[in-house]
Length: 178
Picture (cartoon, rainbow, N blue to C red):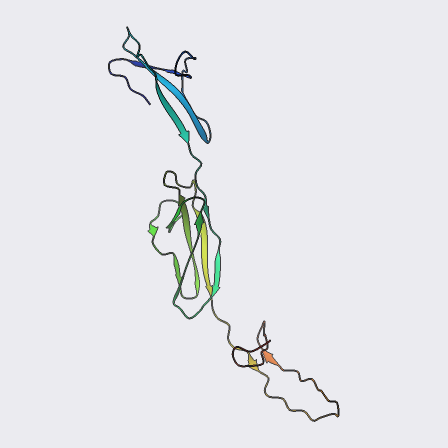
């Protein structure tokens, strides 16, 4: 946009000479420079004013769903990154309210929406991210201590039993070896 006091503007594709441009536009990401010449109907300006139209790429919010096991703390907080900028969290995909600390309190799930900003532009859409806190599984139930009689072999194998899923055996109650 250019304005002329008491006259009109004619757009050109060059600072001098060049061709008249009826409608200066920039299509897609990039920049285009046009030159405005003022006229009062009788005289034209001595110089043309350069005007650059710039369309910047919108930043993208990069998120992922995050699932953690409860660690005893009452809440967990989401994290996300932006391509060349900052993240603002919202409670809705459009509209909604800004959320300072997107978190899930206790076992369950919460979905928040990340909007990226590079200081000039904001992302075209908000990226959904769900934070899930899973309960800690119960300790396995032991099948009990086992005692066997020697069968004369220098080594014997005992089979330990416990109920539960995904059981991993250690040689100590804590900080032991597998």
